Image (tube, rainbow, N blue to C red; front, top):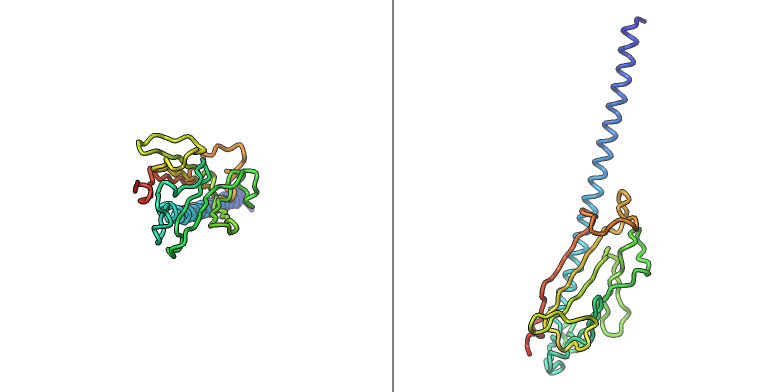
Length: 210
């Protein structure tokens, strides 16, 4: 075997190895892109589902098919805090007055996901056991405004003064991707792994009826 043939064989092996490494790298990148895309889609679906529930309930604050059961709209909101609200409504339009509470769980509560920042968000109807969802929620913040648009400090001492509110929700993917969810990672630097939704000045039609 000549020297040139040996060099050719070595060159072929080296080139084949480089091509294999490139192929493996491309495959890894494709898998990573797929995971990020699927995670982003799931995250947006979670947010859409949650926002649908919240808008449905909050826009019905003070509503009852039997309007005589809520004669004064100012009595519709029973409790209002930064991440906790309770109000009267008619859940199934049956003419019965129901109490609904929305609130976010504490950070100390295990949400059964690798993300250390996400928390369960709860919806409770009357005295039933609260239903908690693990949707990657990291923020559920409520701000309240009076008739003149001035911010009302929380917890609100007199809920009857609430005319409108601002709702802010942030969700992150509950599963670890490239160590994005280490506890020291800044929440606002997650880019593709976080979605944010805000409803400015939501006001139930019944709250405006003063």
